[in-house]
Image (cartoon, rainbow, N blue to C red; front, side, top):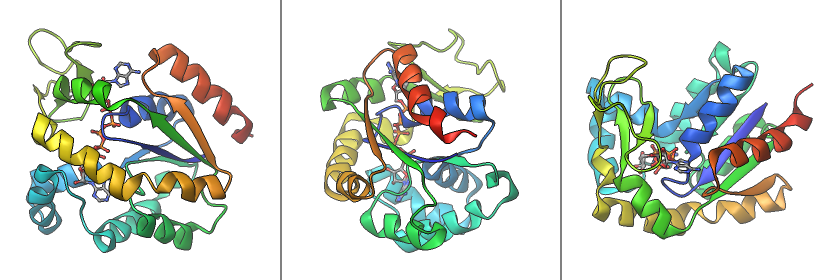
Length: 215
Ligand code: AP5
């Protein structure tokens, strides 16, 4: 199963990817998580990405495509994967097609959520600083002591989840990423889901969409 999860910041790509990845034992490949790890470890990539991520801009296509080429060559990708947050520009989508061929990706799931919902969601999101587990102070609160039940890490607010940065991320999404909808529509791969529905309904809709892909 080789899927792309598309959607604005906070549309629920990471949250919904965890559900399918656990169910089908495939990796969730999040360029955002990879970049945050690089920032935390202080690598050269992390140093280049830090300020861009904090402002809500995009890291350059060349860097991201190179990162993904290496990641998709890893053995754990053999049974499939969910790409979460990549591609994010038309150049990245073309780079992915060049890497995998046009039949490489089977389905693109776009999570559609109104901007007002996104703003509330992201400013109330809390993320484990160690393992990246996601909670939400309104819809799914973390433990009161803010200690992650999975790894013992601390829950924090991401640097790019302030209101001003979220507004910039939404603007960048509309300009650079929203055109991918037409790109994948033309390839007959796009499915649009309401990302502001209850989680159990989103799970059912994803199950129905991906079941035909499983042999
Ligand atoms: P990245 O980490 O990819 O951020 P994003 O795409 O902006 O997406 P988010 O992680 O903010 O949101 P999400 O859709 O995963 O939502 P979530 O599941 O957490 O990228 C960060 C930065 O890295 C970028 O700005 C850029 O600088 C750089 N970058 C990354 N990839 C790049 C690329 N390819 N090219 C260039 N630069 C790149 O959900 C949000 C909240 O909502 C959570 O609290 C969750 O609990 C809650 N929630 C989810 N679903 C529901 C529901 N159905 N009902 C109620 N609450 C819900």
